Amino acid sequence: MARRRSNIQRPLASFNVSAYFRIHLRTLFSSLGRFSRAPFNSMMTVSVIAITLSLPAGLLVSINNLQALSGQVDLNHNMSIFLQPSLTLTQAEVLSHQLQANDLISQATLIDKQAALDEFRQHSGFNLAIGMLEDNPLPHVIQVSPNTDNQTAVKALIAELEQHAGIQLVQMDLAWLERLNGFLQIAQRAASLITALLGLAVLLIISNTIRLELQNRRDEIDITRLVGATPAFIMRPFIYSGFWHGLFGGVLACLLVNLSIWLIDSPTSSLANLYNSSFSLQNMSFYHAILWVIFAISLGITGSWVVVRRYLTELER
Amino acid sequence: MLQFINVSKRYPGGSEALKNVSFEIQQGEMAFLTGHSGAGKSTLLKLIAVLERSSQGQVMLDSQNIGRIPQRLVPYTRRKIGMIFQDHRLLHNHTVFDNVALPLIIAGHQQHEIKRRVRAALDKVGLSGKERRYPITLSGGEQQRIGIARAVVNRPPMILADEPTGNLDPQLSAEIMQLFEQFNQVGVTVLIASHDVPLIKRMGYRMLELSQGELVQNHG
Ligand SMILES: Nc1ncnc2c1ncn2[C@@H]1O[C@H](COP(=O)(O)OP(=O)(O)OP(=O)(O)O)[C@@H](O)[C@H]1O
Ligand SMILES: [Mg+2]
Image (cartoon, rainbow over all chains, first blue to last red; front, side, top):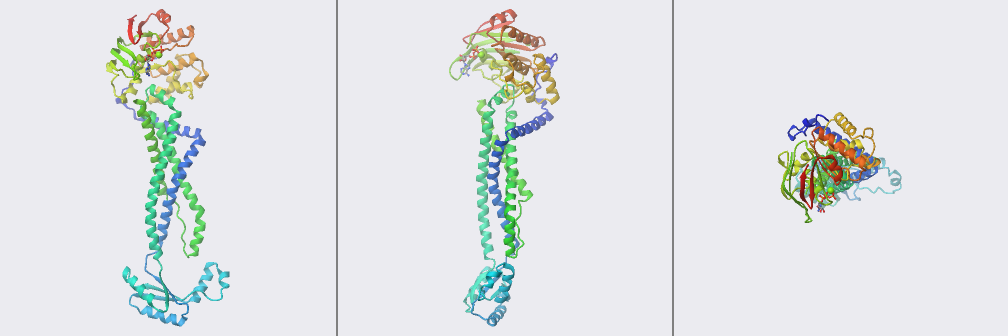
């Protein structure tokens, strides 16, 4: 105590970098300590954040999966021509040769209805039900690859084919794919909107949590201000609390999404098998998970920052 | 060190707590501030710690008008002052050690430095061995000493005390006053607000007396 006179408060200029980081680290972990001392409340809040964030994350992952699915199929204009059921195999073969001769058609392959039924029986698992049918319900089918990618030429070809007496129906194989892609674009828009809305919800949840924390620690804040704490010092534990809420909420949201994918993956794979596809659901990629956690953390930090800043500004007035 | 020049303080409610107060306290001096209840003692101390701002006049601390410094510099001014409050202002869910360490933590000192200084401060006020206790488990006099240890732990050049002996018995009051004398002897400027005129008179330091917000006596 004898050296007191020489030890007048360090001026601002000699700002100490290592002290700065020491304070940060200590606050970071003491805020985590506070977190773990009220485990039930913290877990409740984190769960609400996680569930809220897992909705848009799940939606985005689903869209990614559907995009991967549509990407697996190369877009062509192949079509299936269903012949009138009354046509015999010979008539069908004649028709198939006619089509092969058409300038607009590069390839026409006849699928005999008996062969088709046998194949279906083998792969579909409807063996018993099919066995009970008296007649073969399938028509002969000719699979046709057009010579052109031109949309209007293909449309004209279809119109022409549909006029033919022996043809019952012409179906573009991948018409559904175009529709899917269109749908995915809309879904992506919707997902962005939902992400924004639920992100806002998380921001509000975190703000509210931090506001309660502020109220509980009002005395502490007053007293630290009295002994010379800067606003930055007072804000730090609350910002870190927001950081932890965001981090845990984000990580838990990613886990929830991957858990759900895991739960529906095996039914999806067997469904894909049914369509002769090896398609299986993709988990949220590591890269996307990291982005999602960073998103959650920034929501946490922003939410707490706004609330504490406002509180302190009011105190200083 | 500290100079009031024609300082007035009017609270938003309209009451004028200080009227045209002027005085000066030298570095290393010890002085008392007395006056009836509501005379403006706490208000005067709050102006020095920038807990309130003067309405008129200048409050000079180290030749800086602290009544007009920007808000972002206020914390650094407060660190130059060790303040002891009428109602202790302790953190009740923290230990004695944490309470005393607070100013050092705020200033960003190293852990071992904090330990050393907190021990020294607690030793000085006679609370060594009670670091791990919570304030609520200690007597009023002991809680007052925690507040004193916290005020001096950062070795501020000036100590302000608002009724530090408020509800202590004469024996304890005298001990606390002796503590302040010891700090003063090592060079700290000390200003104490107190009702206890007989005790102050016995001690024989300079006395500033407020009445209805006006400085009516200034001698020692
Ligand atoms: N925050 C405030 N808002 C409005 N008026 C206040 C405020 N604080 C104090 N006052 C008024 O200012 C005057 C001086 O108050 P102050 O607390 O400085 O007196 P004091 O000398 O410390 O009294 P005591 O000995 O009872 O502590 C009183 O009339 C009081 O009502
Ligand atoms: Mg008072």
